Length: 398
Image (tube, rainbow, N blue to C red; front, top):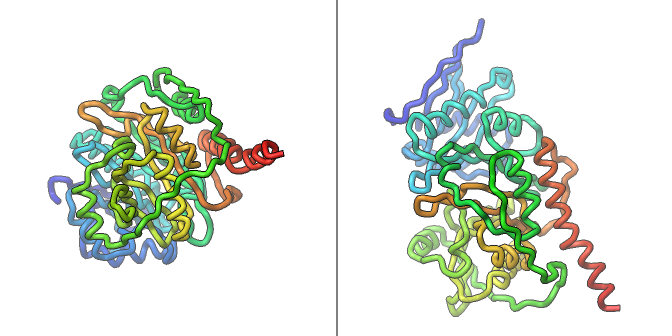
């Protein structure tokens, strides 16, 4: 732990000093109490609730788990996890006790670790985070540190009600210098690209206008899946299974599979990470001989049967036919992520596609202007796919 040590003392007049440091095993109970104080018992990130997972993370050199301590009490927590091979990091779990929020602790902790992994130790080319939309503070915090706004995840989590999250990322010069240019995107993705392009120096994309009507709802072949939920078996099989077909173009860092959909003849396997608690799922990879839209639609139907609310897949930005197939399966673009995927010595752009199984409810969403633009573009596509198409199809039948 010494080689990655991060420590800072904040002195406050007439109050005990605040020490920011790496978390220790002895902090586990106090960290959990602090998350419970702020979020109750419904915080959905497993590593915050499971003592064994928390212990492994605190001991793991690829995790930078920072806490702030004052008068023997844990008053703030923040986690960065690093993937050295992909040179990417994710920041998550930022929380500060209510009575200490005036001291800018979250920003101080974010910057300490950001500087450490990108500059001091040069471990990663970029750092990304997702922020909640219950208030503006997380969006303004990441913006103040140079993070760019890349998209939204409508209905991404559901405990008591649906939650929308935002995607944001910090790019080093190295990330941008290695970026593969000239993405080839379908017309429906272009608005999301333009929103990101306004924030950073991106080249002009090639726009592919695939004429086939996305609103036309034709019956498709549906794959029947056997559902396996044995986490250790699934992880072991996942690392041994080579992605084939369109799965080669998928990308999802920092997730481990805990769900496997497999056809009885084993010709199609789909690996997912899912949470029964917050009804969220993401597609990590797989193998198949079927078309992408058939697989993605079949996965959606299977997840809906499991009472999931949301599914997401991240695809690279250089295959317009695959992007179109995702939309045929009613996965809607909601964000554009430059430099996300390391391929050899280059970094490829990616597009976030998601599908929600419930009606959109954005009444409680608080987002800054750029994120509002993302939401408006997403809602346009959602309305066309789920509302306008129904009327258009009825008109055709007359």
